[in-house]
Each structure stands twice: as C-alpha cells, then as structure tokens.
Length: 407
Image 1 (spheres, rainbow, N blue to C red):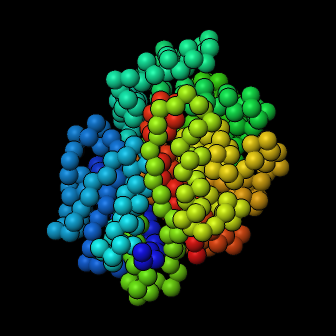
Image 2 (tube, helix red, strand yellow; image 1 turned 60 degrees about the vertical axis):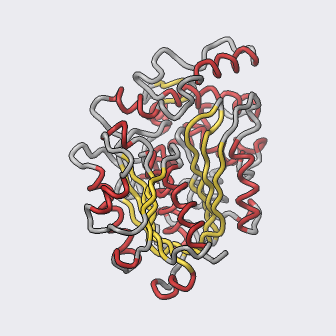
C-alpha cells in the first residue's frame, strides 16, 4: 500500500447558521482546504462526503455530495456519500485513504458537514436520537438494567425532548468510572474548564470564552454528574481535507502530514461495560502505525461530554485508570502537559456538528503537527491521534474511527 498524506485542510467555525444551507457550509470548507493545499478543484479525482442527519434536518437525501459539490463547480468525478453516525466524516476519510493507498486515485477530497441546528430543538434531538436501534433500544436498556440490578432508569422522561438521549446514557456510563477509579464531578468540571480555555484560543470553536469552575457547576444540571457546560452543543459545521499519494504530495506541499493509521470498527451488543469498541479498536491503530500509546504527542478525543474525554483516554490505553484523577489534578492533559488532549476545545467547546466532527478533529491535528495552531500550539508534536465515535448499540458506541497522523 502507498503512503498517503494530508496536503490541505479547511473548516468553518462550528456554530449555528440558520441563514446558511448545506451548499454554503460545504463550499466554504472545501474552498479553504483547496486554498490550504495551493491547488484548484481540477486536481481532485474523487470525493468522499460524510453527513449523518441531512435528510432528517433538510430533506436532502441520497445525492448530498453531488448536490453540494456541483453547486461549486465540482462535478463528473466519482462521489461517495457516507453516513456512519457521528463518525461519518472520519469514516469517509478511511474510505478515501483506502482508495488512494491502493492506487485507485492519486488525489481525493474528503468532506464532512452537518446542518444540525434548528429553532425547534425537538427536531434536533429527534435526529440525534435515531443513532440507536430504534426498534430495540429501550428494551435493550431495560434488559441491561435488570441484569445489573439497576434501581434507577437510565433514560429520564426528558430524553429526546429537552435533551439528547445520549446525555442520560453518558451520565450512566460515567458513574461506573467514578466508582472504579475515584473520579468525581469536580474532575469533570476541571476538564470542562480546560476545554473552554482551549476553545477560547480557537477561531473555529463555537464557544470562545473561558469559563470558571463555578460557571460550569451552575450552568444547569443535565443528568448527574453532567451540567450543560460539560455537554457538546448542537450546531452546524463543515470541514474538508485533501489527501494525496506520496508522489502527488511531493508536487503540492513541503509540509505533508502522513496518515500512519486509519481504522474503523463497529460495536456489538454486550452487557460488559469494560468490553468497549474503543478498547478493541485502539490496538489495531497502534499496530497499523507501528507505534505504542506512549508515542502519541497530542490527541483529539470524542468528548461529547467532559467525562467522555478521560474515559476515552483510559480506554485508548493513554491514561492509566487508577491514575486518571491525578492526571487531571496535575494538568497533564493541558496544552503544555504530558499529553495535550483536545487542544481545539474538543466537542464540548468547539461544537459537535456530528457529520463534520471527525474531520474537525483531523483539521486540528494537521495544524498541530505543522506547528500552525497559534495560541493553542503544542510543543513540537510529531505524532497525533483522533478518536471519533458515533451512535449507540446496546450500551456502547455503534461506530468508531481512529486515525494516527505523523509529520
């Protein structure tokens, strides 16, 4: 297989854009990625476009890539529409990387977008709530609770109405980690403060103001231990990258960022909270990249909630569970810490437009490895990683994509 590099990356600020359609979002991100690569659309041989709920939110189904890209003059080339919950655009990157590394194409465009915000919040929550087995999700959770002697219902009466059902599930999952490793709500508050501090340095983040621990605690309870400022906001967004073969990349840029590993996996129904997709997939990513966990210098993880950040780092083998509280207390996850985590602000502060989230993570790691991340720049990283999950199958993620990038 051939070496593949990211030669251009672009994204718009993740935010709420009631005045913009999906064509606008995609055009802005693609134009920025092409400009970053120093090339025009004529060099693109294929396009892979990821989105998750465009049909529900906008009515546009089936030919989303063709509709959005043809509107900006990109047409006739092979286009692939990819839907894989919150991991849609990172799954699109995996497919594009596979094609370029196999020699099918020399240069491909990868796009992720989502028009998720709506004045009617119920519409957004209902769209998010489809990333489960809609026929069996409730019965699965009820069976799980019975087997684990659960006293309280995992889902509250407000799930899917005034909040996403995922917040109740994240809260439930978080409590098991609190019991196992001595993590407290205060630790999650600190992670939220860190995320918003990092987001304040990111022009692409939805929330760009630092917050205090008191503000996080008083932002309104969602489901203990979660408060509003610990949860990723509903928003719109788009991101894009241009990837090329080594030979093609040499003619385009002097600062390629190499895709050392690109792995995708799917969940399975299990009653074991320790048997997770992240735990199963991580070793495959490290093996593909030819490295160990300790060689990761910077990472973007799927922190749909603040606790999810430390939980994911534990499951990826990057932070010892028994030392997780210490890592947070001592600032090891800060931009200048031992393992800078979510320097972009993560989903909690940057935002979570689900179909665009994965490439938003890639955009951050590409800039970190190039040394072009501005105020949030990590000190000389050589290896970066992204962790992007999506949907729920049983009590675990339904889809997952991990990428490891190198200078």
